[in-house]
Image (cartoon, rainbow, N blue to C red; front, side, top):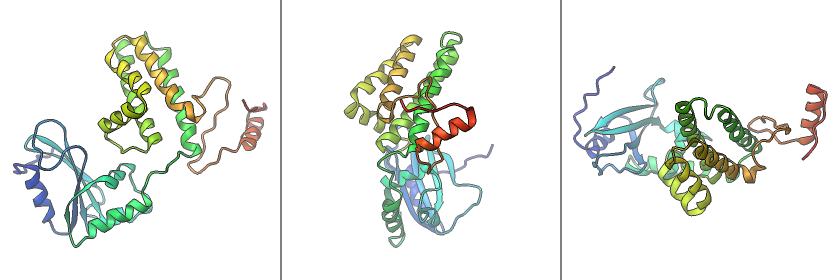
Length: 263
């Protein structure tokens, strides 16, 4: 274990220090906490942008300042000149606040990425297929074990709720990692789904939990053709693959000696 021996009293003090490091061209913050907020609870998220990559192995550091957990990404100008982010989490920089900017470099980088890092307005066929499959697959794994192992079932359902929120985030083009924002959006725009989630999280009754989870997955997959159903051939498409039904019918015949009819 490596000892974190920083002596910063406040987050602002840390930000000021980072801003004056050699090679730094920008410091930005994102998330719900600002550098001036030292109240307990929650963490603080920021990114330090360097002229050049400072490590081939490290892209961030976790530490504590005044008892507050800090998640600090360490990126370079090159990370913001990529046509797409190397990590989808970097999309948080589409909505961040500049704390330090050397000669306007950071502002220019952030304005530039907004033109080519924006999330697509619609999911491609590959993403739709994975959601339809994933939603049903998680329910199938849980269905026959629901009453066999209570602790496992509670854990699996909680884990699946995280997957459900990832789907909701993708479907609505919301910002990653902001559960409160996502839930607020759901409450305002999808109140039926919000009530399903609330009931699921508040109850300890396993049967009700499973029922609410199933209704939530049905709700999310409805506009994508519904969850994968028994008797349906569902294909895993390549990221840029097209949902080519004639090709899929031919593949079914070639692989299984059967046919694939439209439903």
